[in-house]
Length: 205
Length: 67
Image 1 (cartoon, rainbow over the protein chains, first blue to last red):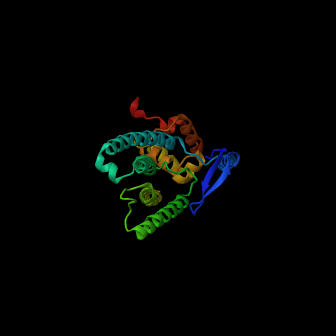
Image 2 (cartoon, chains in turn yellow, cyan):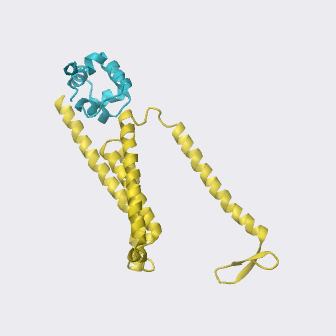
Image 3 (cartoon, chains in turn orange, purple):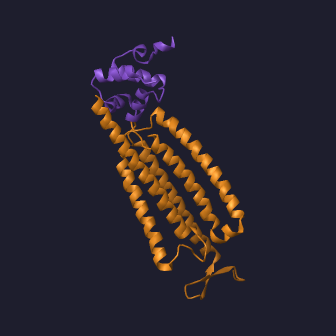
């Protein structure tokens, strides 16, 4: 901030350039408008998707009970993994090697994985008319994208660490790739089991 | 305990689990769980199953062993 109320903005060359306070306020409000617009677009999109979705396609009563238990288990897993992360963060050696934001995301990922696996194994992950294959394609896309980030970081730097620490940039991608891979494998196994069960049922009849 | 009465009634109507599930607006796995005795349905679902199979609640869900 200069004496006349103007801010100094540094460009790529490192040279300073005067920016008035009003100009700074406007540029910040543009960012805010963009964020608000994005939130509105997502909210409207979700509302339209839910409103026009097939009303008959919903979780049945058994699935809702299973999901309620899965939420409880996921929450329990989150608390336990959070406690473990808090303990690990207090250790000096761990703190040197791993960024705290990565640890927090690790706890969230554990919770999400527990919830997903419980729902998948108890046939409560998909609604009645959902197509698991569509979800599998989504999982493959996420795995490939995150895997690409990890591998390109590994090729560029020769390590997954950044400044000697395991951070969110490659670490978070690795975590997401592993998480979606686990979910994907669980869905495939469950699909095969359900297919075998349905075939067995037909044979019995 | 397996619900063999329901399984027999479904077979008599020549319905697959999937077809009965569609009629009752539930998943095939839920019908399978009821038949295996792994899940006790609510009264609303019992009624929906009875209507789909043209049976009464007694005929499908009353367990005489409990009397």
